[in-house]
Length: 64
Image (tube, rainbow, N blue to C red):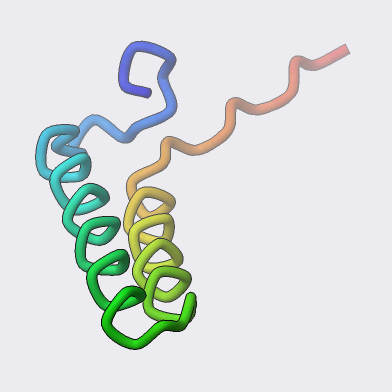
């Protein structure tokens, strides 16, 4: 994502990837324990929100 210019310069890819992995693992554990997909859905929604918060702004369209 950084190489493609999709992350802000202040984003830490290692920390973000760890957070996504931890959300996935925790969500799966709670999903098994509660026999419901809601914990996994909530964990992954939170992980995606964290990733989106560090996304680089879209480039402005070229003037014509």
